[in-house]
Image (cartoon, rainbow, N blue to C red; front, side, top):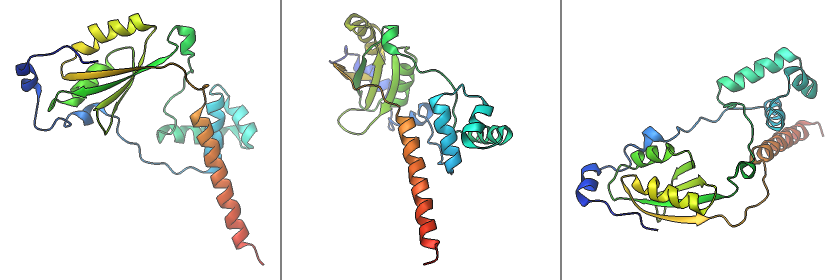
Length: 206
């Protein structure tokens, strides 16, 4: 759906020779990879399954002392592996059952970092991704219904300077919720255990 037109003069005033120059101010900086052992991964898996587990419970599960667990948790927090603790919401119970995806094409030459910042200010915007391909950004929205979506587009998103065109994809169905982090952590544990076992077999006397 094309957004309402804006004056060419206004767009030219905000356009620049490097339209991606301000993206770094709005984008998340990549985190360096952290070296983790099997105990770290098992600890993360337990916390992912239940972040309310006490250090004593974690120590019992991992066969370690509580102070040793506290030291590992503190290190993982310092390294940024553990970014925080929280709850997982059931969006359907809150009335925001199905996500909506929005592709955005920016005015040629417009500072895309500025558009990202304006989008991030909207409560309904869950995520903004700068992508390669036929359009510039992919946005995930949380709305209650079509009326809410219409109001959001007309009165908020299409009022953002620099947005030339949008296309909306409404979710019809989605897969059952899965915990990607939990599955990837379990896979990483299996990889490390398998690699360690292979090394032990290679070094064993024949």
